[in-house]
Image 1 (tube, rainbow, N blue to C red):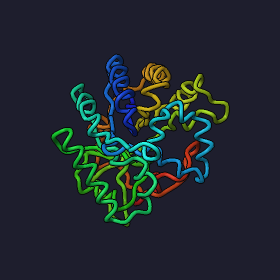
Image 2: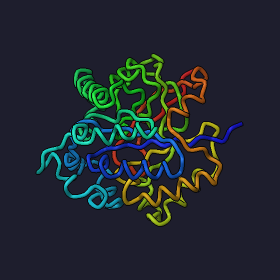
Image 3: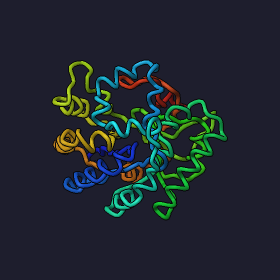
Image 4: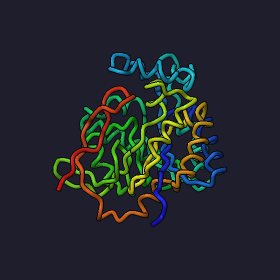
Length: 304
């Protein structure tokens, strides 16, 4: 039996993350000789709009714990508020193409990260299809071919979006939080596109809770992965965090996971190694995740 796979999923939310964090991650992964999946935000950077979440339970606490200004920068936090939101795909398309040219898997994160994260859960089919279509078209424009993988911004989706992903013929999606890969069931219908959910907490969910600091967060995460599940893990990292100030933490994690016996790779490797017709079927629901504000799409009950 081969060693368990820990898939690395990189969410790229902002222009700064694309231009600065992504190249650093490409260099780090290349140095370790590992694959990863990069999911890009492809339209306008409206990070400043996130201030509207100020009344969401847990938001201010997370901002305080994770030093948002330090990680994202003042300029990024003004996009959409006092500064126009730059078009990430137009400004950073060459960086995105360089990731694929380096051999990594690339896919869609979203069109407008903040807009999708804050609205999609209650959006109608028309709005969802419009935002979805813009992301799909821009990806094809940048890469010259259709995307095959998607990971939702902020782990936020609705039934319309899940069906659109299914119709797109993606190899897999990573839109939810959960414990193992599954075939999603939406309104009683089993979708063809499997879900490979994020199984581990992100660094910003751990730091500032129960005595966890940037200095010991790697130790905490390595404790959680000490016993490997047969289905492996999916770890979501961010170009704005692990690609920048938290890069040394990620470097330590990659070495630690290798020492624990994991293979490190992309979502495409996890999919290729699994017989999809053996995946269990699960519903999807919204639920709370420790360390993160609001509710996220999570793996629900098994469907027989």
